[in-house]
Image 1 (cartoon, rainbow, N blue to C red):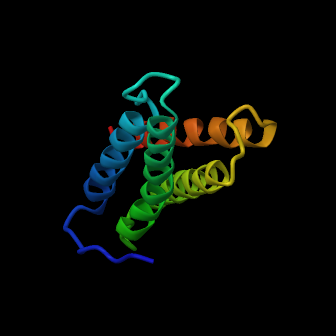
Image 2 (image 1 turned 90 degrees about the vertical axis):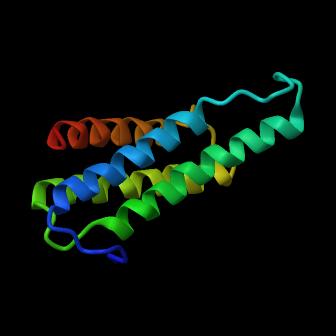
Length: 121
C-alpha cells in the first residue's frame, strides 16, 4: 500500500527508492564483524543488519510505489520487494543462503534487480 508522497514523476521516485534500498542491501550484506570471524556478537549484529536491510527494503519499496508508476516497472518492483522480504524473513529463521530454495530466491531477486536497473535507465 502506497504511503509516500505523490510526485510528478513516479518512475524517477521509485527508481530513487530502489537505488536507496539497493545501496543499503549492498552495504549491509557485505559488512564484516569488527572483531573478525570469531566475533560472535559482531557476527550476529552484522547478520541482523543484513536481514533488516532486506526485509525493510522490501517494505520501503512497496510503500513508495505510486499507483501511476509505469506497469512494467511497478510489477518488477513488487516482485523484487517481495523477494527481499522472503529472503530476509527466512534468513531471520536461520535458513542459510546455501539452502536450495533460498538460493533460488536470491537468484530471482538478482534477476528482478537487473530488470529494474534496466527499466530505471
